[in-house]
Length: 479
Ligand SMILES: [Zn+2]
Image (cartoon, rainbow, N blue to C red):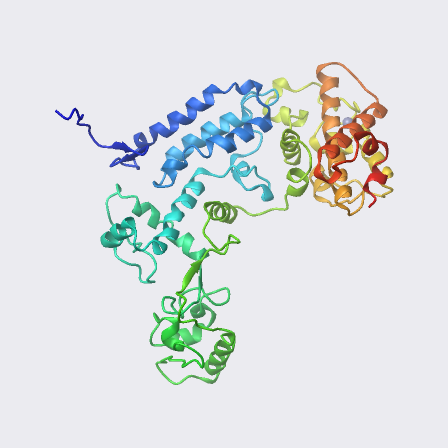
């Protein structure tokens, strides 16, 4: 009569399946199908490496957010999605169709430590789930808060829901509660009236909870779960209601004096409630992005990646991503091909520019006689003495400041260095694949033109005509 169809669980509500089991792989099939159908739609062969990075960032990473913001993704499903991304990123790179030039865990790292900032799906998932932990104490009157509270009860800290969840896998809160430990390590408390913050156990003063800062006092204190206002009273002078189990020793008295001194600047304001702060963002409010970055940085040793040189330079994105590959020594030079695809390597394994040495990224972009001649020319122009560093990676990491400290000087030096790398790579390919050979004078002119063009397009050189930049680099960089 009402023309309603009876359908089984799970049903779709706002695009999210209700009542399904997120631990079952089938639950995630729609996500995987959507990603792979998007990917098939693109003509990968016609996209540059930089173009593929952009597409993965803009689309693939945002597509499953819908699901990831509520459910914990099973490792096997995360692996499937990452494989789709990985194959897409490396499809059609250079000669080898499926060469994965840089390890995926490196690719996922943030740009400052040498990755592409794609992020691992599981971290993204945790960061999105963390949002609920942040919202929970702030939305005390919301229905969802009341539902969670009535099912799980309150956490002993008085802010969060209980994290000991022994309920069915169908309730998303269980997965969210698992993020609590990482989340609570980051949150800090801001003292208002001091009624909701635990004096000893919460992080509100210094870099650690007071119980950790003063372990000897914490051991002998009677009330460990006690709020700031219960200890200090409502206002100054503080009443210091601390009950110790026994008389304090001399060293414990010294600790107590230190503790009292450290709170000299503290004021309680009775009209302002205590608050929780997210120190990773400048606003103090939680953001998925900052939590995600913290998660990706904690799992991987940060190294000195020349991220400024690679990502902050004023060159097209396509070029940046090429320089990123060079920094990782992962362009398809001969030594790489020898290892990965011996049948494709040029034989004999010799650098086409000098015809003397083997071809590696360090040789081709730095030590080769032709290349080093170009570098010398750049440094001579800047009137700088230099000693060629050991590797192209070091070359990018050293802050040479050849054209001075001005904004323009820094921009121009970077684009000139990158233009040099780019032109050497073009020349190498022209000699191998097109049998063309240009002399170093011609290459230098190409570098000057390319670098001037990039500089001309940058903000720092706004209003300066291209031919003026090209004419005298030193003059345009002198303030
Ligand atoms: Zn060479």
